Amino acid sequence: MEMLDRLFGTAEPMAPRAPVKTGMGDPDVLSSMKDTGDARKRLRWWCQEANKEPQAHFLTIDPSMACAMMERNQDDEWRNRPSSEKGVRRYVRAMKTGWKLTGETIVFGRSGRLLNGQHRLKACMDSGATFPCLVAFGIDDNAFTFMDSGIKRTAGHIFAIDGVPNAAGASAAARLLYGYDKERDWGGNAPDVDSDPLLAFYHENEGLAESVNVGQRLYHTRLMVISWASFLHYVMTRKSRSEANDFFEKLITGIGLTSKNDPVWKLRNKLETNARSDSASLSLPHIGAFTVQAWNAVRTGSSRDLFRWRGEQAPNQSFPRVV
Image (cartoon, rainbow, N blue to C red; front, side, top):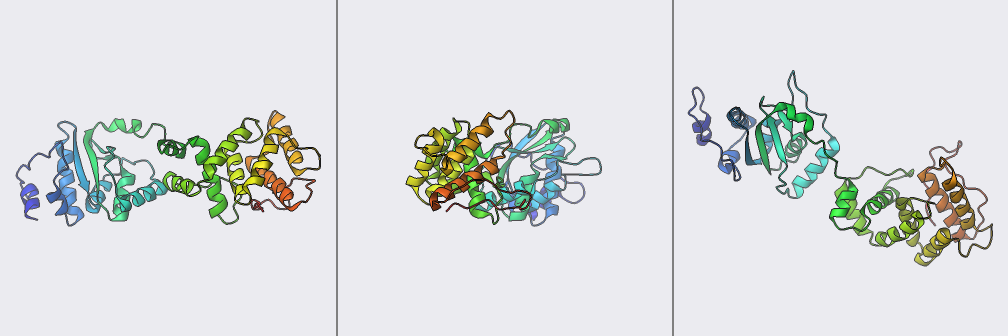
């Protein structure tokens, strides 16, 4: 604590040495912060120094410093944006597995208020980890309205960065497959999954990339969107790749459909009618459910006179499973 006493004192403190504007801050000072009070003193000094001119420092932030910073997240006159628990959980996972210096800043205004960085700071407190970060002080408080106003990086962006072909379609198909595999009584809606675990899940299901190619072909017929076509083809290949390819080839081209009693003919006719409608009446989950029903009929050698799912008598019916 000697170093902190020399830096801050208790009455009339000596002027502390100016913080370095480049480099990783002062690890000796940061590591000696045993409680939030010590961190609070250091943070107060940085904010005061930045009243003269904006400054930025590379720091290694520990939970006590994160706590001190979060105290500046709101006061009687100031409220930051509502935090996202999902965003905090994602940062917690990243910090526990090894955070990388990203160059994204934590920002304090001239008033000393925290303008940007609350999710990373909360994650630091929750995880107990330390993380390196660039911290800017003395920024115009009115700049807050321009922060985080860019386009949010979607799962499709993450897939594209990873080099996945047809990234948007592949990520959407993987999300549907995740719901089908992981959620009990899945109802056909795309589940809320973070991009990183979704990408890992995609790579675990190697055949999905090939199914996306098939899904693109069906999409060009306007009968079904890529995500659903790809997802459905893939879950069918788990039962029989050759039968799945034959089923989709008939659905895409109509070749080989010689009987109106063929479940694929009936499905194709229904989807064509839906596509020609000025306002398509079938939801995507309904199209998917009807496709599974046609597939199951082909597989079991049974007829399919009607396609019905989630009607008035069973509004919460689970999505059908392929056989």
